[in-house]
Amino acid sequence: MLSRALARWRQPSRWRRWLRAPPTIPITSAPATVPLPGHFVRHWGALTSKPYAFTARPWELKSTESVDVLDGVGSNIRIDTVGSEVKRILPRLNEDVNEEWINDKTRFAYDGLKRQRLTVPMVRVREGGLAGQLMPVDWYKARAVLFHWLARCMRTAYASEESGLFEAHAIIGPYVDVESVAAMRRIFYSVLPEGTAHVHVQEHARTGAPPTDWRYAYCANTTLAGLERADVVLLVGTDPRHEAPLLNTRLRKAVLFGNARVGLIGSGVDLTYNREHVVHLGLGPQTLRNVSEGRHPFCVQLAAAERPALIVGQRALQRQDGALVYQCVERLMQHLPRLMPADGSWNGLNVLHAAANTVGALDLGFDETLRGSRWVDAATTQTPGARPWHRAKLLFLLGADDVDGLEQLPEDCFVVYQGHHGDYGASIADLVLPGAAYTEKNATYVNTEGRVQASEVAYLPPGQAKPDAEILDELLIGLGGSGAVFDPMEDVALLAPHLRSTYGWQAPHVVRDAASGRVHLGPSAGTLRDGGEMYRTPFGPPVDNFYMTDPITRASSTMAKCTRVIRHTNFDEANA
Image (cartoon, rainbow, N blue to C red; front, side, top):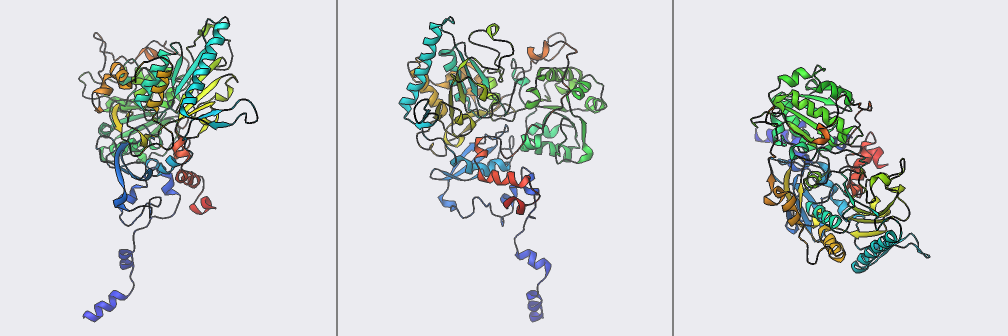
């Protein structure tokens, strides 16, 4: 009997071959089209992360707890490094934010941190045989070049009829930390008090921003974990599957386990929910107006919901009629008392930001988004129909790359770029100041739900690069705005005390009218006249390419392979 059993064991069988062989994933285009397939590596021990395979031994790794800045969720992560090189990034457990998950962009884009880096200050030569080229200089000469240009602009302005006034702008990128935003604010209000500073919240942004009078008007107030309790969800101009994959998993839980209903206004996307639970209501803002006025069949489900939730994408507010879109949101809140009940048991208003620190910048008072509406020499002197910023003499790009219209700047405009990668902003700059990436500095970020989180230094910046706040501090001292070292957190404590007091989610106080109980959102929504015309242009897809949304992912070879895969039918064509 024993010999017969051994003989039978030696014979191949399907179940025994499966038991011995490691599990495999079919080689199709499906893994690259889903933002979360990398979790198979974590939960199936036989699978290996290819970028990390055979590159380091576990006991050689130095682990640092930090936060991710590649989307608005702010996932808690663990950065494993060897020396000054990131070997892998893993999720860190936080049930309130990302649970135990991270998206693939966060997990595999770390190789972009070592490519196309800015390591030394550079100045563009304007004359001679090397005209147009960037030449490396030291920090002392880089600051001297900037101070010389400012002095030259002031002398020219005083010699003219403009009484020493000249046009200056600053654009703050979507991944800049709170300390750097506060330092930039101090520079502009100390040295250039009439200058214009803008928050660049997403690529190709043009105009529009939510009201900033009260914090709940521009945050995801339901919180990420609270979205699992929603029974009816209305999505407006957003694609949470690609804008915030981990928020989308919360909505998927609400659909699968809570039988929630989801209404979508915008471009048709596959949200990975049960199709019978998702209703595509329409493409454009006209559908949103019908819903807000109670003239749509979906209003029946919204009115019957006990915990309704409304999620408005930031791209929907960046349209030319973005203020009218937010007015529809305000009207919908007045018609649905359960969306924000008076007892404070639920808050269903959510604005989904795709950038890492947009909420932090809005907390500090930056409510302009590339509008260019405030000018040093007054808006009345601008020529009607002239191209934007045609009289600009100074433009400071703080981590801002995907900005439209920069090619239209005048030739005598001096462009300063401060960042960590040689992307589009550095290619047009006259002065390049190398900064530190999020893995190379201690910084504070505020995610889309208003949660304050801190990143830790995993390794030092390469070459002569410095943290952004330190660079701006040295510029402020040289410009005469401060006689001692400037602590940006002092301004943070003054402007937004909740960012300084403690890390974690801060519940905003909802302001209501004492007589009617009406919720106040802000003047940009409340002062609009009723019956305004909204554009018939439908809401476009918020994300064109999930795998390339910032300088880090654009420098990543792994993300480049993922981009090739989603544009082909299989891996063979992508590798050809």
